[in-house]
Length: 143
Image (cartoon, rainbow, N blue to C red):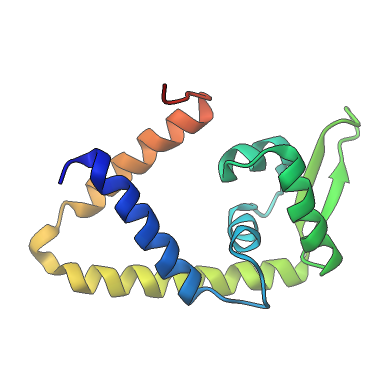
């Protein structure tokens, strides 16, 4: 199996695994991903949109839902009123901490399944993640 076939397969498998193991507070999977990505200092809507891979209008609806449930709050920049930052509220921070624990358990479980036979897997995955992150941050599109 080549990389072109392997990446979508891994993507679907990981999404399924995470969806089944991270059901918290009846959050949708995109809401769960957003809460997990938002750092302690908050994140601008445009940056969060790029990281999740959805347009701003879709993200706005997602954030509305999280805001109504008390997980996040919006903060307008004092310098530029067009810039909106999303911050986790206390309840959102608690959810992210639970997600961290669940993701750690999933990672440990997979690592045990792989054993020591694949000791360079972490290095390969780190490099893969770095390259994907660069593609996203550079707004590169596959043609």
